[in-house]
Image (cartoon, rainbow, N blue to C red; front, side, top):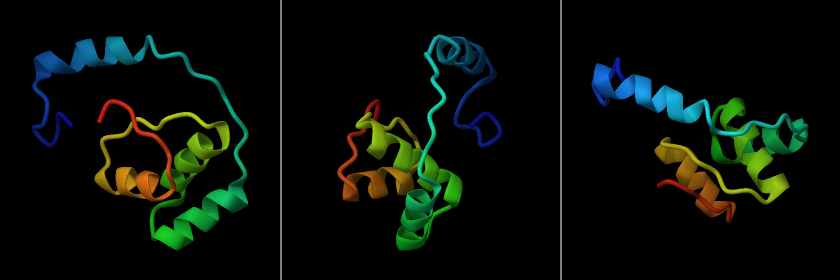
Length: 82
């Protein structure tokens, strides 16, 4: 986002510090289901992976990507921070 001039240099470090406080848990995701999402919605497989992960775990998705938000809404995946 810095490269696209959507954030200033001063905004980047606090954001990185904040994201470091987000707990992360590794979860196995059904790759076939993720690929079905990718094919159905014509999105990148790695985006579909995150969508499938949120769907399978019944967790909300946090993304700034407009297309991922739209697909999440279609899949009835709750969104946070948007």
